[in-house]
Length: 95
Image (cartoon, rainbow, N blue to C red; front, top):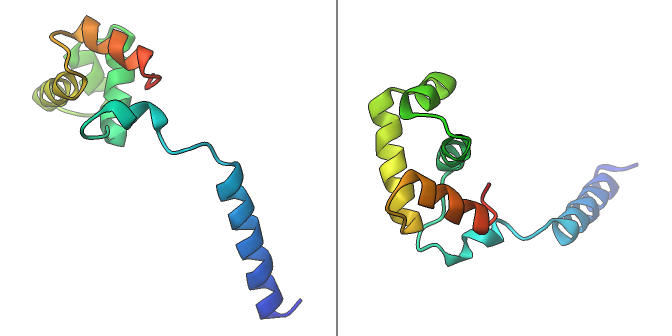
């Protein structure tokens, strides 16, 4: 197979994967600003009932850093507390 043929096959394979792949994060369509990968990790752990300290230990982050992430998550979801944030994230399919 020549280099040109290999490139053409690779393009067709990538195009097929793109066609078959689900839309990128449709659950976040209702958010003014999408979640970062780290925020998604934290909201999953928050929904599992972990404290800021436990989340920090699990992700090798300072407790204060986790607190800042939780504040941002609450704002993005329009939630007043961790429980409401977990429920909204679950309703949106984020977790």
